[in-house]
Length: 412
Image 1 (cartoon, rainbow, N blue to C red):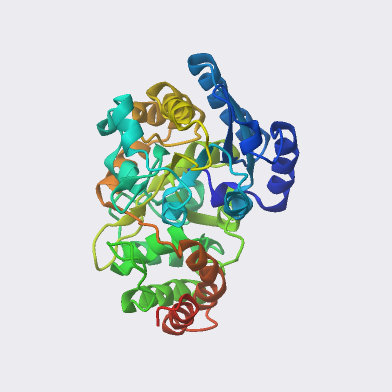
Image 2: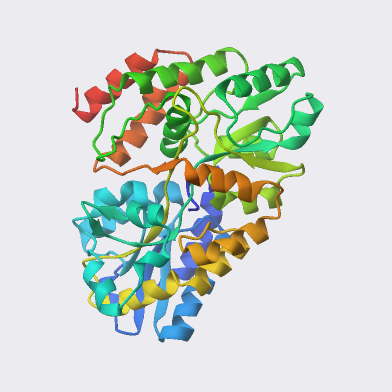
């Protein structure tokens, strides 16, 4: 699930723009469709990202005889561009979709249940959390390619210098705060704060079980526990254990890679690529558990089919290949995804080469819940960067921030 944390601001956006100029063959999806030539909408983080996804398209060409032309944008702009294309009748045939946002696009995507049944596809080969994340109201709107829970990445070297042991899966909020105090005493900052929806909601969920999206996918922005969770995150900033939050959701990952913070939250889809970037010993563990016990949210991404596609059966054939064990194993080996197919997950563990990663990830998966999307998920995400940011940075209380969000969402 290569998304907001993998996009490194303007530099990545510029690189992606250059790449996309070369891979796009026109703005009209409808005009470029044929049975053996389709377009594919994907978020692209730069040249390496583009090359990895082009290999997927090449596999579809070699195995199915279908040419896929990739068209896309950096993740920050992807869904804005996709919405414009869908409303303008120029959407691509194959559409990459994040589980958190699937509910926003049910009117524009084909349910895949009948196509999957007709093709005889064994859906049980997919991780159940990943598959359920691509469903809305019981209908399947995409075949998942990756999945995973939000976890805590940490700098083993910084912790060792502060005299702190590596955090074991199942560690607690008290352990987390004691680590923050030890690092502060050494002049270091423990945690890179974020208001990115999946990461923010996972930290609060682990802290006290507070959730702003219910188990039915409904919004509950006035949830008292969630507001208290924001206050807790604000206390970490106030105590000097965490950085101030930024509207740039890639900042925590960048600060971690540069050694400015000892920890930040991310998903397994980023672990291998982050390992290649850093110049220190990288570790990963579960989120700190609070009053509700160990818990985190999981999310993923997949490939759906636009209702504007003239050749849905050919598109589904391509999507089948794009989510095959062969392709997902290759993506796992490159660190592009924690595979949604359980049979391909072993390749990710082997490629990670990080002590304790498999134990930590399996522990997190066992305590994870899918973070369901909602038709207002995009708006909620935007409001987090305005109001939740103020709460985390101590400018307002969690209750006041969530009251403002509820008012903007029309749920108050």
